[in-house]
Length: 239
Image (cartoon, rainbow, N blue to C red):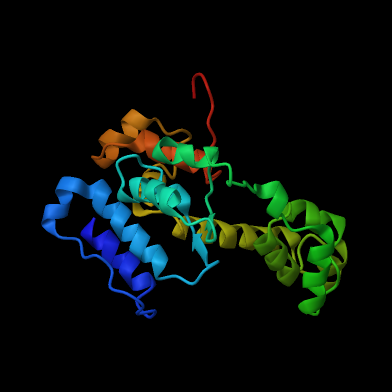
């Protein structure tokens, strides 16, 4: 917890409005009480109507992890005039599930945030490129980064592929490799190790993965990958 509170200190270190409580060993005896006092001072150091953004909330899904209990307290102590935005690849679970019961909680999913066709056309105009056609928009499926990469690569448009003379299949493979590399590098090391160990396997069984990697928790790692729609599919019955 001490390291966690130090990181919170650094988030507003330049404001210098008031001294925040310092976590000492004796505070382990009343961690909830110290957290409440700390957060009230931390929020007091912010400007009124401040906006706090927490990204990758899915990484705090482990009930035993520090961020989970801290985030629950963060929501409880948040002043009503401060907005808290939490970004995640999956719905809150475990200790974070009560967050969804907050009457001031508003959920925006992929359908609300996806890139619209007119926005993709505006992006193409800013990049000095031709407006995307239906094939490109279908492939990107509202993913802004995908729209941008497909526009730059010239894939998904029959005109671009015909005029450039390059093999569209090669371009698609290169594009997929780019997407996959970026997605893989964003994963925690436990997920990367599991995927690499099963790179040539048609299926992954949690118990086998635990023995192969000498760890525990492969089932939870696979669940996280499946919920994020990263590299794996879940099927019932024999593999």
